[in-house]
Image 1 (cartoon, each protein chain N blue to C red):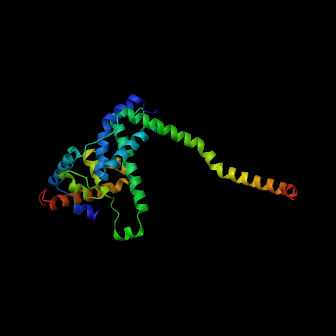
Image 2: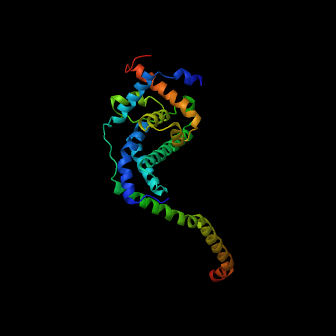
Image 3: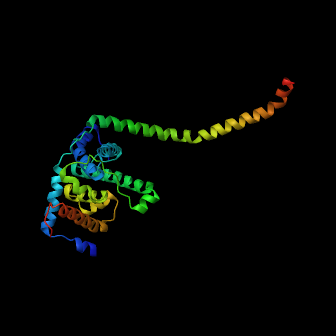
Length: 166
Length: 92
């Protein structure tokens, strides 16, 4: 398989860059992080032998790169977290105060990995297998993790009065 | 498994989550999305790749640099030791 040529790259970028940015922004909560990660993801895409893939496969591929980059950041952040931070349980990534929109306050209360899981499942419509591959998790754990994330989001929605208690 | 059962949802709840996620996906961030144009990204990626390949070629040379410096210092030391008697004769 060959690499993408300039025209194919431009088409892929036009179709997917905004969607990828939205995903990365909603997960990291920081526009500057989303900017960096999108650019890094597309630079990596250009070095990959993906010339024969269709539009949908390319989209999944670029989301997988973006998710891998996110997972790398989480791993680095965990490694860099000091002992005291771990004891205090401060492992959440910083979320930009500009993280906006009334609609997303409940979402930002979730852990970054839960946000990624929900986004890939509901917005991108990816299967458990694809989510597992994208986030570097085992396929068997996705159902439980996704269920937990849904539960936590629902708790947030109920707490904010945005939905009725079951 | 127990946790999964505790959090298992009805179809209505599932729909609510799906509706919330659709609304979130449709919402544009307040500051907008500012991404570089495709051709800028293309040039940037090409340059990064070129730098990376240059770095790969340069890496062995960078790795032996300390040995080069060390060898230079040793050679200078030997030269000094070898020519020291002659130097002392000239000075005296």
